[in-house]
Length: 507
Image (cartoon, rainbow, N blue to C red; front, side):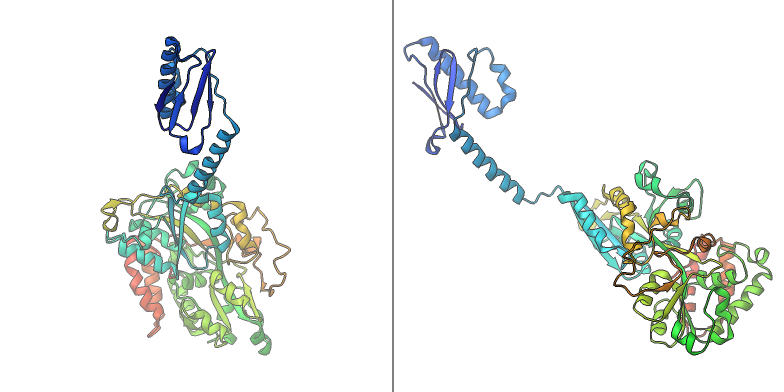
């Protein structure tokens, strides 16, 4: 008998008629590979056994890919017979190895860090996205109170070349308002999204979105420009009024922008302090577009007519303040609130006597979009001087957010706004049967967050204004002469953007 010690778990018992028989030994003998020939006096068999031992040792150590190289030394037929004990041994070890594998946490997960506007991402999205990616994604979602907060972080980190790991500038993707995109592009705070034409999510966007989103490297609209941001929800400016107060004082309901100039509402209105929205309301009242580029030639009466209506509006509105305009409305100090649907609709739902309308002559549209911070070329000292690169999951996140089923939280009014697909007036907005079930009914002309089709056709996204038009805005706002008001302070702090063709919208 010839013995050969190896790490094999098998015991070769004997060879008979060029057949090799192998059985599982007891556990305490597993390190012995014992080979017996059928005739110990037969020198040829001994040589065969030794050759077989070497071959089996090589098979054990290197695997089946080495078996062909030993074909000349192995017997013509090698029959490996596993007993039930072998199968039991292997099953136990495989099971133990699998359990060990499942308990391990591997570093080969793909990170995706998202910084979003608070209350703009449905909670169900977070759960569903993690489930769709499995264990390979390390998903982190953070929220900021306003778009201005996110923009400020980008400016202080990417703008100064000092990106910290916890800042919005180090995120893979962030929320931006549509009115901030052009300034973010011109300041090189965000980078274009590459390869959009090959992405499913881009194909689902309507032509209206594609035209609106294309910008040049200065942030201005350009049919040949690149895509810097992707919408995930949108809405409109709306007017809300307290029905109980209107009934009490026998006032006619509000239907359009012109109603804001009614004498019976003087001092009873609160409004956001966005220059584009305030002057835009005047332009709509005068029958012009929000995106009027030459006020003197496109508006009857020119800048002076706009100035007169703007001054008279300041006598109607008690408070211009994006941060506090709803507080005055909810406590009853004013009876009318003019602001973004993302603010007003949730507040109105908590009240019992409010009507919310999109003016029949149309309103401005807003959108929250995903953008990629332009930190790819910025060295991060906190990461040992390494350069940040965009996550490979960015396109998967965009594709996920634009899938048809993502619209459900908007349709059921869990989150204010509408999905990008709802912008197409040829696609009817579904009305869920459960929309008003066990929920307070809101008196509004919005349909699942979308203006009626005849009004939607008159609504507009705010496009970037030219430098000359921005100077007109500065002159008009200056004519309002509102002392000690945050509106003027904010306007002046944003006016340096005018020289770069940027619009100002304070979220």
